[in-house]
View 1 (cartoon, protein in one colour):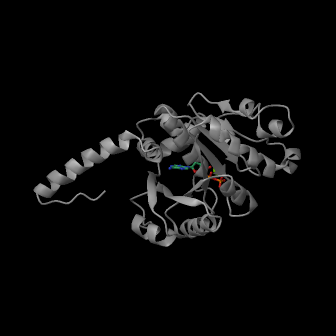
View 2: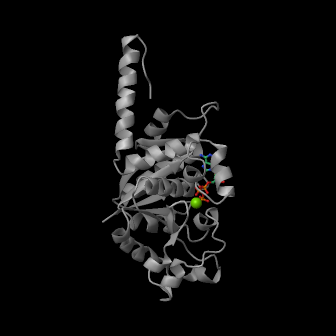
View 3: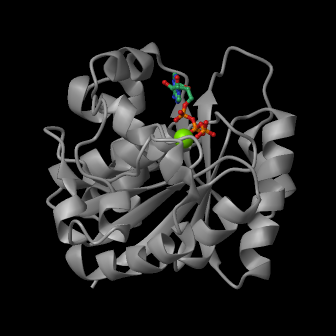
Length: 260
Ligand SMILES: Nc1ncnc2c1ncn2[C@@H]1O[C@H](COP(=O)(O)OP(=O)(O)OP(=O)(O)O)[C@@H](O)[C@H]1O
Ligand SMILES: [Mg+2]
């Protein structure tokens, strides 16, 4: 039985959908099953990024008893499994509270379920957090996004959800941005992943693919794969740590220090 993680941010546009789709594709390549659920019902984008225009099957069909939940799972060639919602304005009035309750059943169908939450910290984000066991917060390394990330962390904890940590997306070492240590202090949670600003991310979505599938060697892809492996405790992280340990041992020997 899998775990459910909601991916939230507070501030919009920081990369929640990008993170969700790339983790799912990376986990598929590691041999795990992962379902992304569109939790951004007022402004759904995950299906659009993958080229479903529109998606032929949605959670709204399930709410109308036209499909089973299993039948609403779309499988993309990148390995991402997705449950999305209707783009129709008329369907906005759907009983999404019931939909979020149903999402919990997906636990039995995958190793990991990722709810790609909407921006903000209103009812939509709250429903996503309540439907999940864990919360992952995405931010950019700029103060307004980081402050909203702190608010998301506090909201998750007030709802008694465990915060896995924060992902800093669109990091650009050549710009004056908040250092990771400072972000950790502000958000009161550990940073579990840093993803570089990488034009391959944007380019890949133009071809309807997550970057880990379309440009597997791009810098952001390597970082997404590392984050995905960390989530499931995979060995690629351990192997990497062994290498880093060896590297820092030898650097130490010659009087240098390795700073990860
Ligand atoms: N690491 C990155 N490098 C370059 N571009 C990125 C990166 N991450 C995200 N983007 C781009 O930023 C834009 C916003 O990303 P995304 O839609 O994932 O954000 P979001 O938090 O889900 O937004 P919303 O709050 O509207 O749901 C997209 O155009 C995406 O391609
Ligand atoms: Mg989004």
